Image (cartoon, rainbow, N blue to C red; front, side, top):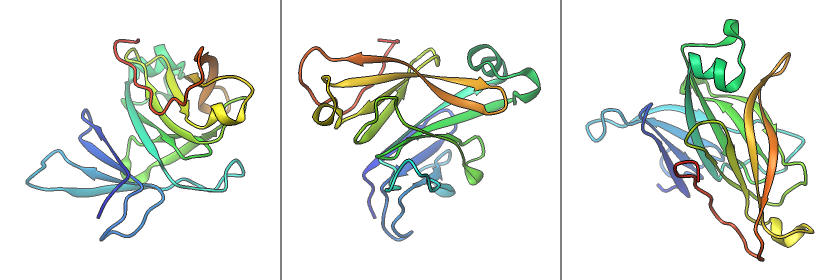
Length: 193
């Protein structure tokens, strides 16, 4: 089989596939494997499939990234009320071509979509996301935006935050715009730079 992309959550010991096909069949979502005992064993631990949304017509997962939050980080960084905080929270941001999906993958056997998110100024191909090292922000990448928007290539900075009566949500904070015509394919953050 094959996959377009792989992501490894080293803390949880999970490997996420994107655009995978093969003996398990074609999947528009992500197969999640337990790799804690790899190479001795490789176990399918869960499957994430984007839920239908009026915000998109395609459902393929192009890329995925995860971040873990302790109980204290949920309260301090995300604004989660004490009574809603859990011992550990693992969040994924899935880039699904036409939306970014916020997904609770704390239990990978029961991955749950929390939000389908689109940037304020639209977008063409939601390609990739990356958390800052301090877990405060998420950089969202739309690789086709320069061809369809009035400004040059831009990345969206979002924050993960608790909203009463809604739960955790991605909130758009800022646009970073390149001063030259470019197509930003992937964005990674190292030491918050």
